[in-house]
Length: 187
Ligand SMILES: CC(C)(COP(=O)(O)OP(=O)(O)OC[C@H]1O[C@@H](n2cnc3c(N)ncnc32)[C@H](O)[C@@H]1OP(=O)(O)O)[C@@H](O)C(=O)NCCC(=O)NCCS
Image (cartoon, rainbow, N blue to C red; front, side):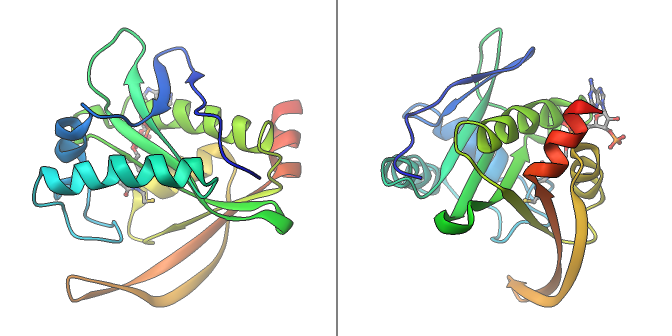
């Protein structure tokens, strides 16, 4: 799984594309919102510097084939409303982890379901993955429902795996196999 070729994925309502300079304010609106970051692996961002660092780090990680993060841009234009990522690639096992977040005002409209269907199609298709994993806080009900809609199976619970701003939290581990994905598409 070498370097990624800056993919752009299209869905009915979204254009999924790599982050770029100019996205910083929209990123801060997402990653700086305590409601969005409630179950994230870091506290909410404090300022634009963290947004600038994400854009710069993403470009390097994508060039190195280490992570693929795409911003969710409305198909009819405007600022990005979320991000979705494949990361922690294990090349010989053809496995990666998936992460995602959506601006609070965009919740409840099916946008992330739409985005992740496209990201997973790219992962199991062009990237040749065999397994995609997600690690979520078991209290994160919206995220658990999202993974369920996409066909992920809950496979286990790791206790007190994270400590974020002094708060310990568990990880519910979810997995989706290429075979699950293909069966769902046929079904
Ligand atoms: C996880 C997260 C992306 C889920 O957002 P979401 O809005 O529930 O997910 P979707 O965009 O797929 O929308 C699905 C919801 O919209 C509804 N919906 C409306 N129109 C829809 C459509 N056309 N298609 C699918 N769902 C639709 C669904 O019923 C569903 O609501 P429900 O779960 O209450 O039944 C969001 O809660 C979030 O960003 N959380 C913070 C970040 C986070 O915790 N990430 C996970 C850790 S990696």
